[in-house]
Length: 110
Length: 115
Image (tube, rainbow over all chains, first blue to last red; front, side):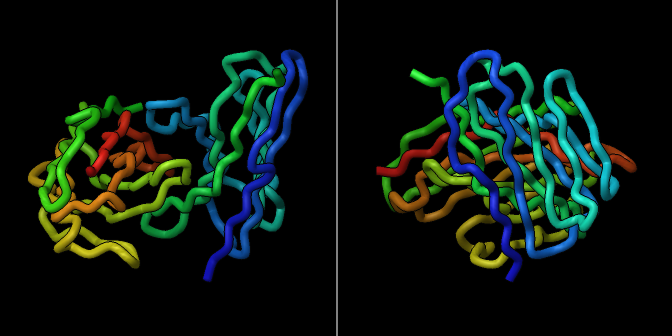
């Protein structure tokens, strides 16, 4: 069956740092979405990618759709405390069905 | 993006009972979806709620356990039947982004605890 791997599972950030996370899949997708979920809330759409190789930014966030259509990464530049949360990749298959990665939990360094 | 509300926001239920969760969206949408998020886990698609026809369930989810209604283009319900503690999860509805837009927007979720 289809495998979707998101890494890292968790990371600690210090204010001002750049952070990066990625997802790889065994299947090809035509759409790749990135969401952020804060505690007690539903996922919020951050970036949508529709073309292989596409690089898209949303403020301090940048995401790219891999050229093979099997992977994607999300970068956060100059992190701030409100970047804490869980980030999910969610490639979209036929019938608009989303498959969610395992999530990357972003925490603040103590 | 669509504005989506869910009721209840949270509930604590006894095993063996059933709970119906409502999802309301502020615009007409063709496709609505129901997801489950078990504690500390990612989201898993339960079913696609189709207006005017039966819901389409994903592998591992059955209509007897999770009956779904979709009476119109702005509303859907998910019932969690004969609950057990293993059903304790967050249940989320989502809607498609709109004609020609391949995205989904999520409601705030319903946090269910089964004792």
